[in-house]
Length: 112
Length: 114
Image (cartoon, rainbow over all chains, first blue to last red; front, side, top):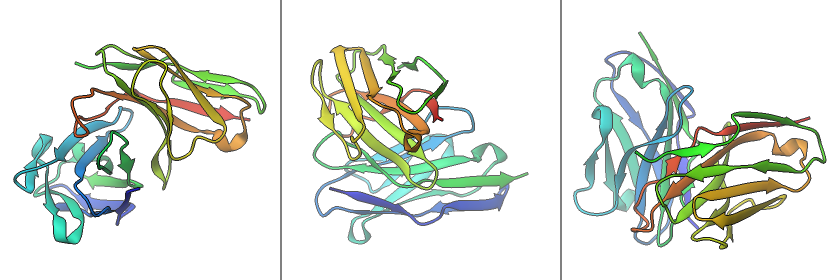
């Protein structure tokens, strides 16, 4: 079974700062990778996903993530955050089936 | 837009009670899932279902059961609620187009067992 590690539990930064959230997974085969976001009081929603092709994927709201197969990583980035990016971010992975394994989540607080 | 509706936003139950959490999706999705979300642990899969009357155990099925009598409805049952089942419960659904099809989540049910 695959497992997912997110390196940061809580990140605090100021508006316009750059954001990078780390995600590593443990599975040697082909994987599908996802980042989900949960804004305060809202349901989890898909930010972006990777399953094949260009390892640099772009998602909603200016987010992007890079799949580095050799490092088993799928880090999330945003060049300039806004106060509205305050949320909890989850990395997730599945392999050959529909069971999605999630990381522990990273809470991002953006100060105005 | 896919809508996944969980019947209760908040529930308070006593230890030993039988608890039913209901989830309905309106997009004719084949797959449905129940996760629990706990601080520092992320989301952990309890049970999932690929089709009507089918169910499979996830990573933490102990103390739970499920029912899927209709395609759109997936129920989570706590046979005898315990305090360690206090948590946020999330229902999700996805289509069977492939493992890269994203999950669509409900708003969650926050269950407190006293």
